[in-house]
Image 1 (cartoon, one colour):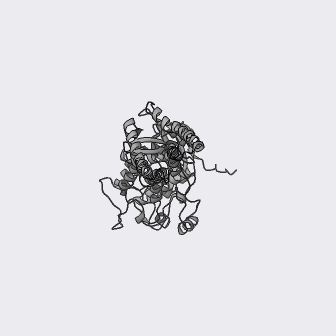
Image 2: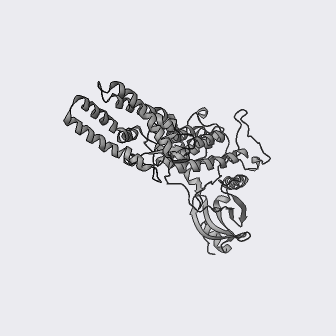
Image 3: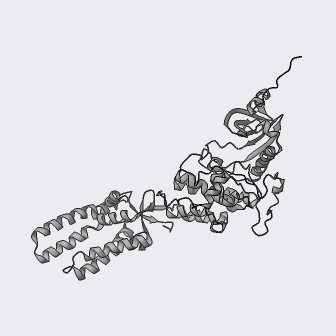
Length: 453
């Protein structure tokens, strides 16, 4: 009697083929991605006539209770959170040996391996905070926030996916699971107890790595680490194991985004750094607090400055020059110009604009609407007001009957007058309202209708 060698353990796709590519009333069209736990397919819901994503667990894993519990846990947790920034779960079921989840099709790809602008980061971060806030309201924390678990739809809206590590929110006061709504997170299979660790090391908070009780501040840390990577191009740490992560956490913190020389407002960099604070008390304490900080750092609506505020701001700044020059012209002709220069630099450092512009609610910006560096402020000042120094020297030369110097000073002053004042006059009739000096210095004078800088 001949022996029969058993077939090797079938994979999920091999199980599906005998089922005519159908799981219940869902048709499987093509594989989108695969991993250690299974695969994700593009599918179609024959009942409701809509495209869906079908996530399968490998049959050999489905026979292991811990993996099956995690899979069901993901489906139940994700199904409870109904929000536009969370991937929606429609169905969880089993067909023979195949366990699967049918969920919303988000077909724009994940943020893994991408770099985005700070404006995009704030937009995505705010939406994700709202989704996670809704999850927290239902007594659920995600515990695995990372770029690969953030999906974009065709409209560019970010969605949180993969609630496989979701857990109940613990009270900071009692240490007990919180339950604020009729929805019971107790229906979720319990996978992780205090003292055990699950997650992705580069994005895990210190308390998560230590296996401690967690609350929403753990997901806030994950958000910070995720957007650190999306802005900087690399994760805050290369740690891939808990041992490496513990060593990283015991050492100095990663370089701040501001220190990396990235072009973004200081408020944005500080916001990310605060999300990643190692001490829980130094982090944002709630999603409401984080959303308020995001709104404060977000780009303000701006419009080109009209003619009247520009002229008034110019006259206010020139008043300093006129007052000093009148008293010191014959003794030190350029003192008035130096006083005006100091006036402008001091204003740029203190209020982000010249004092005259600040009084008229005008802001000096450089594309893409970032506060202008002091070097550009100085360059713009010299291009727009430098002729005043040569004008004072010209008048002093007349008093001193210095003919040769007179023509040199007058010529240089006329040239700068053409660049600065001439450009400003032309800008009054331009749709862009950008002076020639603005173009040369790469800055713009704008009205900040949002009331912030």
